[in-house]
Image (cartoon, rainbow, N blue to C red; front, side):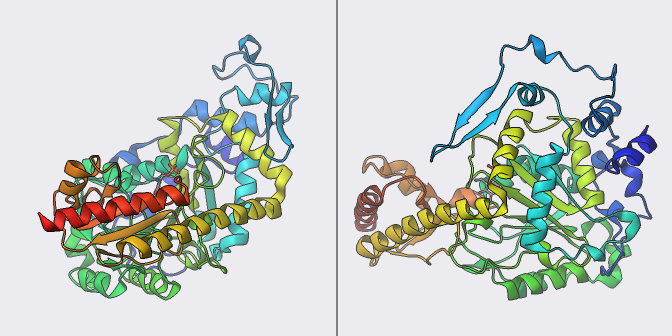
Length: 459
Ligand code: PMP
């Protein structure tokens, strides 16, 4: 059946597409990636679901196909008929009866074809990934839709991270990543970072322990995965320069690492041109990128994407097949209708409006910080995203301060410790989001925070 599927839609590959010797390929060069060495035992054991293969096939077949396969329910029995979702500005996204029938039905695990192909075109135009670097038999860039980028990350970690593995990341980092990684029993190695993100010199120093020439001897202790948030980091707001990215990429080549580029704030960069991504420099096929529509279209719709070398994305899809099966068809169709009616220009125009909003919120937060916090705190202006990372002077650990006293002063921020690998390590930072509150509320919050800090220092 796999042959049949591959012939018809060229999309379905089982674990055999990754198979190879397990010794690692050393420094990556064109066509030299051996993905087998990166997979966990659980991932290597995942098999394509025969039923899911049929669903993919059916999705790509002409309407004249009579299918008695699959166990899909009959949508005529469902109570919904059609949907018209009013847009700001007067237009509407319409799911007429035939589309609504599709929206209410199971769909393929890569995502609905029209959304995936729209996104592939966008990724190509934004990142122009040098996919020529992938050998012909391993295919080229592939994408799948995930239920938010969080699902993509969880599936990627499940695919790549064994208990006991050394995983490199720059903490403080997104607490959702720590929540997904830590229970896997891996050893998280912290690469130092500053307000320009991960520091390549520190990565080089850490990696020096694992001489690639000794790869055989060092076996499983060699890190294989590096995770980073390149733009508007959560919680730090830091964005990596392209020089740093290039250096990190070269180190990843030397030590044969896969890079997980978690970039949900890519579309919220305040300056143009947007920074080149790891995907855009990926000659070897060693970057798995997660994107999200959460910050620009809707967080509740739960639409994210994984982009990367086909053999790895195919494997992510095997994990999806066995869990959620696919992201909501209704949500995907609704978003796809919108994107097709907008076109890439309309999409980017919408993003410009979103950026404008966040830029002005960021500026409002910075001027309130200048007004109230200058003597009691330090920060760097974020160039992307929705967070300001604030170091409180004279406070060793913000956990105590926030938990014990902040509510008394009626101001709430996230204590920085929750973003550290060891959350009980004392941390003098707090994370302030400028996404939801009005400039007036932000101003009042910082007045209260300044009071709180001054009280705490005096005690
Ligand atoms: N990565 C980072 C760095 C995030 O900040 C978030 C959301 N806060 C996610 C991933 C997950 O986003 P979503 O699942 O909504 O796409």
